[in-house]
Length: 191
Image 1 (cartoon, rainbow, N blue to C red):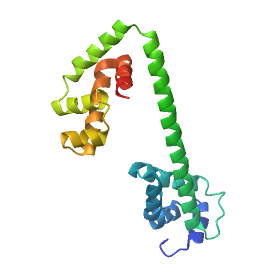
Image 2 (cartoon, one colour):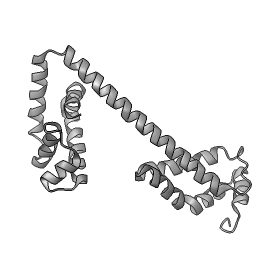
Image 3 (tube, helix red, strand yellow):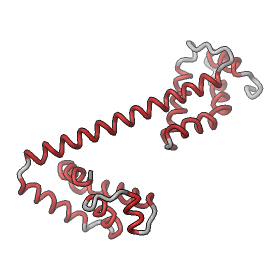
Image 4 (cartoon, rainbow, N blue to C red):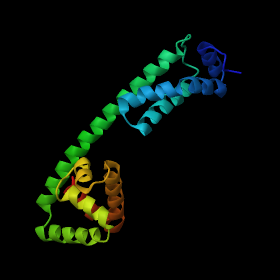
């Protein structure tokens, strides 16, 4: 029904609350929009989210938008804008985490008794030895030797994805076993 309709006709039909018109626009442009977003974000989930958010916004604003046949350029501009905003959000979040981590580590080390730090470290070590051998190796190389994922992968002869998976799994297990305070200490040691 909508496959032969022009973009302008789809926008008008969508404004009349017909979700099928939105679906046709999505079918026509999703792949190209996704590729455009992925080119900027280099992350599958983030690219999919950017495109979906643009279509959600288009539907929510369907009564306000008056495009006159420029749906394709509107969608590409909206996806590019959303992707660039997400890049800014990610950069700001990383900067905030870095500043917060440095502040927390400095404050934590100044106010905590050295004996408590020694006990926390011993507690963490007791739980690390319960992890599978390869996971232990990856975690220790990461926080004790401060190696990056590519360096760990090269040293152990495994893929970077495997290293990242081991680190994520180890952190999840440690968080559930150690509780928040001790886990915070582990994160400070790893960072």
